[in-house]
Length: 113
Length: 113
Image 1 (cartoon, rainbow over the protein chains, first blue to last red):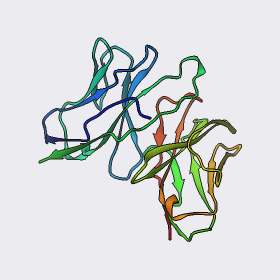
Image 2: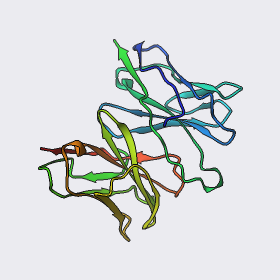
Image 3: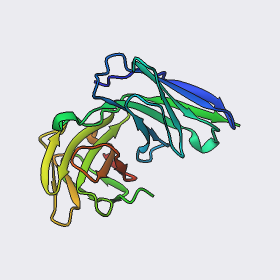
Image 4: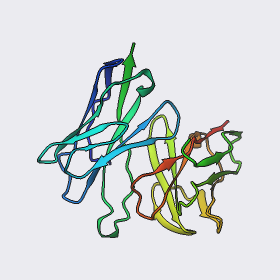
């Protein structure tokens, strides 16, 4: 089972920031938070990941709370092409763990003109 | 373009039949993963290979099997097909055995009639 909780859907106006929340209250110390997205029926696409510090790349920013029990993915200027299902995943390969990425139901983000 | 190639894009077959899905990973990636996505189950991890060896197994049915060849391409074999096997099948690849950033192909849409 997925270890994360996300809202099933969100809307965002084009050009505005999209803030996608994720709860992972049972996250353990060596688990990372990963974000992927899936644009309609395409293969999922990696966005960003982090452990405890905030991270930023060319696609998005990831803000992780100090207690690591929740995080927020921020798309700073959402476009129509950002309409997709966004998956928040916790994962570790610590100690050679054989765990694999478990995708939950994600958040369906709709960016509207 | 993720660099992962899956063929065929669409496959229509009848119950009881056997099909083979093919995946070529990104150049340099040693690990291949197979996922199944159906409307009611979401994205389910099936199996992972690393450099020709099975690495991890998920919810893969006994009617399904996979292998990774010396040139690192992989095939997923589905036999005794049932209506419920209709789904999108994704292949992903990564550099290392422990998956962190996965690159997904565009999938094979299997329809069992």
